[in-house]
Amino acid sequence: MNIKLLKKCIIILIIVIVLILTILLVLINIEKNKKPDSIFKQSDETYYEEIQYKKYNEVTYAYINDQQICNIYLMDYKSNMINNKEEAYKKLDKEYREKRFGSLENFKNYIDKNEEKIYGIKLAKYEVKSDKNGNRYICIDQYGNYYIFNETAIMQYSVILDTFTIDLPEYIEKYNKSKVSQKVAFCIDKFIKNINIENYTLAYSMLSQGFKNNYFKNQASFENYVKRNFLGKDQIEFKEIR
Image (cartoon, rainbow, N blue to C red; front, side):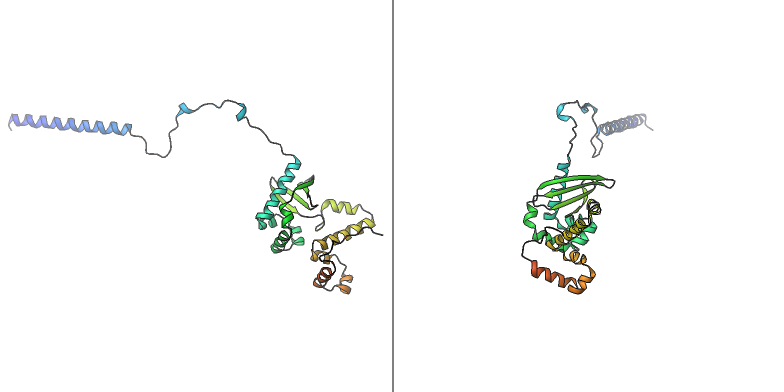
């Protein structure tokens, strides 16, 4: 082989090797400086700063009294009666719901009939009672209507809308401690109140079987009698028991 040609080949080979190494170094340097392909931002410790106590960032505790709680529950249930009748119906105490209304349709009719008063409901009086089952908030609006909230947890409750459809513990106790004449008055009052709110099913169930057999053999005849004689007139009331 020609010595000159050999030298040229060696020089060319060295040049090629140098070029390849140079290219590799450039690529490695580019890769090192390349930012990671990620959606997460890298934390920068230089931005961490301890929060200093200042008056405006102090944690404060709000204490709500019984009156405020009563008003919150009353307004919450009022809102449900106006805007979500199904939810308002579900919040009724189960036993009370069945005895007073019996169906969602009857409850909706009750709301429609009392719509004007429901829109104007305001807390007028309240009482709070506590026992092993929780708190009971007894609210009375400006019309004298009752809203008895049995609280199971914060903003979790069942509600009763009167004091006579079902036997409440405090009224059973009061009844048991009363004289015979007072017990008679309680029963008559309960009967009359159910007629006044047109709960004919419960009122009819309070009649003795003998009286029903002689005068009202079924609820329909009793209901017709009440509507014929009392509907559209002042509500029934009694003044004394002899």
